[in-house]
Length: 150
Image 1 (cartoon, rainbow, N blue to C red):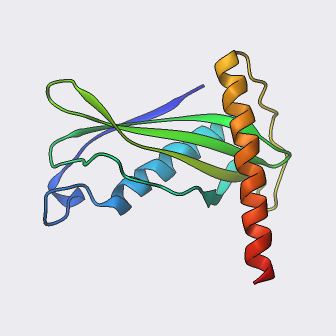
Image 2 (cartoon, helix red, strand yellow):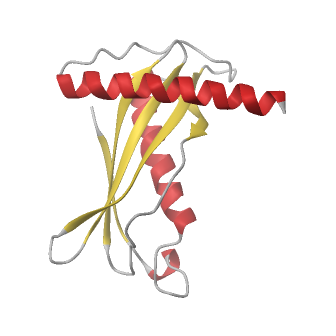
Protein backbone atom coordinates (compact mmCIF):
# COMPACT_ATOMS: atom_id res chain seq x y z
CA UNK A 1 0.00 0.00 0.00
CA UNK A 2 1.14 3.55 -0.59
CA UNK A 3 -0.07 6.71 1.01
CA UNK A 4 0.22 10.00 -0.81
CA UNK A 5 -0.41 13.65 -0.10
CA UNK A 6 -0.52 16.60 -2.46
CA UNK A 7 -0.09 20.24 -1.45
CA UNK A 8 0.07 23.54 -3.29
CA UNK A 9 2.68 25.78 -1.68
CA UNK A 10 0.87 28.82 -0.31
CA UNK A 11 2.25 32.14 1.01
CA UNK A 12 2.07 30.89 4.63
CA UNK A 13 4.37 27.96 3.70
CA UNK A 14 7.33 30.00 2.38
CA UNK A 15 10.20 32.02 3.79
CA UNK A 16 11.51 35.43 2.64
CA UNK A 17 13.06 33.92 -0.50
CA UNK A 18 9.68 32.46 -1.50
CA UNK A 19 10.96 28.92 -0.89
CA UNK A 20 9.11 26.32 1.16
CA UNK A 21 10.10 26.28 4.83
CA UNK A 22 12.02 23.07 5.55
CA UNK A 23 10.03 22.60 8.74
CA UNK A 24 6.75 22.76 6.82
CA UNK A 25 7.93 20.02 4.49
CA UNK A 26 9.11 17.94 7.46
CA UNK A 27 5.60 18.25 8.96
CA UNK A 28 4.00 17.05 5.73
CA UNK A 29 6.49 14.16 5.53
CA UNK A 30 5.78 13.18 9.15
CA UNK A 31 2.01 13.19 8.64
CA UNK A 32 2.16 11.21 5.38
CA UNK A 33 4.52 8.63 6.90
CA UNK A 34 2.41 8.34 10.06
CA UNK A 35 -0.73 7.66 8.04
CA UNK A 36 1.08 4.89 6.13
CA UNK A 37 2.45 3.45 9.40
CA UNK A 38 -0.98 3.54 11.07
CA UNK A 39 -2.56 1.79 8.10
CA UNK A 40 -0.01 -1.01 8.27
CA UNK A 41 0.10 -1.31 12.06
CA UNK A 42 -3.69 -1.04 12.44
CA UNK A 43 -3.03 1.13 15.48
CA UNK A 44 -1.68 4.46 16.59
CA UNK A 45 2.05 5.00 16.12
CA UNK A 46 4.68 7.29 17.52
CA UNK A 47 7.74 8.60 15.70
CA UNK A 48 11.01 7.11 16.96
CA UNK A 49 13.63 8.19 14.40
CA UNK A 50 14.20 10.10 11.19
CA UNK A 51 17.29 9.43 9.11
CA UNK A 52 19.27 12.43 7.87
CA UNK A 53 17.09 14.55 5.66
CA UNK A 54 18.60 16.52 2.79
CA UNK A 55 16.81 18.93 0.50
CA UNK A 56 18.16 18.41 -3.02
CA UNK A 57 15.77 20.62 -4.99
CA UNK A 58 14.01 23.83 -4.01
CA UNK A 59 10.25 24.18 -3.72
CA UNK A 60 8.81 27.61 -4.48
CA UNK A 61 5.58 29.47 -3.90
CA UNK A 62 2.74 28.01 -6.01
CA UNK A 63 4.59 24.74 -6.74
CA UNK A 64 2.75 21.47 -6.25
CA UNK A 65 4.32 19.07 -3.78
CA UNK A 66 3.68 15.33 -4.05
CA UNK A 67 4.64 13.12 -1.10
CA UNK A 68 4.43 9.31 -1.22
CA UNK A 69 5.04 6.88 1.62
CA UNK A 70 5.38 3.11 1.84
CA UNK A 71 6.41 0.65 4.55
CA UNK A 72 9.80 -0.87 3.77
CA UNK A 73 10.47 -2.93 6.91
CA UNK A 74 8.82 -4.21 10.07
CA UNK A 75 10.19 -5.48 13.35
CA UNK A 76 8.23 -6.73 16.34
CA UNK A 77 6.73 -3.36 17.33
CA UNK A 78 8.44 -0.95 14.94
CA UNK A 79 8.29 -0.23 11.25
CA UNK A 80 10.22 1.87 8.75
CA UNK A 81 8.45 4.07 6.23
CA UNK A 82 10.17 5.49 3.16
CA UNK A 83 8.89 8.85 2.00
CA UNK A 84 9.70 10.45 -1.33
CA UNK A 85 8.90 14.08 -1.99
CA UNK A 86 8.62 15.59 -5.45
CA UNK A 87 7.99 19.10 -6.67
CA UNK A 88 5.70 19.25 -9.66
CA UNK A 89 5.93 22.43 -11.69
CA UNK A 90 3.06 23.77 -13.79
CA UNK A 91 4.83 22.27 -16.80
CA UNK A 92 4.16 18.85 -15.18
CA UNK A 93 7.91 18.31 -14.81
CA UNK A 94 8.65 16.45 -11.55
CA UNK A 95 11.84 16.76 -9.52
CA UNK A 96 12.86 14.72 -6.49
CA UNK A 97 13.11 17.01 -3.46
CA UNK A 98 14.12 14.37 -0.93
CA UNK A 99 13.84 10.80 0.20
CA UNK A 100 13.46 10.08 3.89
CA UNK A 101 13.22 7.06 6.17
CA UNK A 102 11.14 7.37 9.33
CA UNK A 103 10.82 4.76 12.07
CA UNK A 104 7.60 4.45 14.04
CA UNK A 105 6.60 2.31 17.00
CA UNK A 106 3.06 0.97 17.14
CA UNK A 107 1.33 1.75 20.43
CA UNK A 108 -1.80 0.52 22.17
CA UNK A 109 -4.41 2.62 23.99
CA UNK A 110 -2.05 2.98 26.99
CA UNK A 111 0.82 4.16 24.81
CA UNK A 112 2.77 0.92 25.26
CA UNK A 113 4.45 -0.74 22.26
CA UNK A 114 2.38 -3.38 20.51
CA UNK A 115 3.20 -5.90 17.77
CA UNK A 116 2.82 -4.94 14.12
CA UNK A 117 1.86 -7.26 11.26
CA UNK A 118 5.01 -8.45 9.50
CA UNK A 119 5.82 -6.99 6.11
CA UNK A 120 6.24 -9.66 3.48
CA UNK A 121 8.04 -8.31 0.42
CA UNK A 122 6.40 -9.52 -2.79
CA UNK A 123 8.70 -8.26 -5.53
CA UNK A 124 12.47 -8.12 -6.04
CA UNK A 125 12.22 -4.33 -5.60
CA UNK A 126 10.46 -4.76 -2.23
CA UNK A 127 13.00 -7.39 -1.14
CA UNK A 128 15.84 -4.99 -1.98
CA UNK A 129 14.14 -2.18 -0.03
CA UNK A 130 13.64 -4.54 2.95
CA UNK A 131 17.33 -5.56 2.95
CA UNK A 132 18.42 -1.92 2.77
CA UNK A 133 16.07 -1.10 5.67
CA UNK A 134 17.67 -3.85 7.76
CA UNK A 135 21.09 -2.26 7.13
CA UNK A 136 19.75 1.13 8.20
CA UNK A 137 18.31 -0.45 11.33
CA UNK A 138 21.71 -1.91 12.29
CA UNK A 139 23.30 1.51 11.65
CA UNK A 140 20.67 3.24 13.84
CA UNK A 141 21.22 0.73 16.65
CA UNK A 142 25.00 1.29 16.54
CA UNK A 143 24.51 5.05 16.54
CA UNK A 144 22.11 4.83 19.47
CA UNK A 145 24.52 2.66 21.46
CA UNK A 146 27.33 5.11 20.77
CA UNK A 147 25.18 8.04 21.94
CA UNK A 148 24.27 6.20 25.15
CA UNK A 149 27.94 5.51 25.88
CA UNK A 150 28.92 9.18 25.61
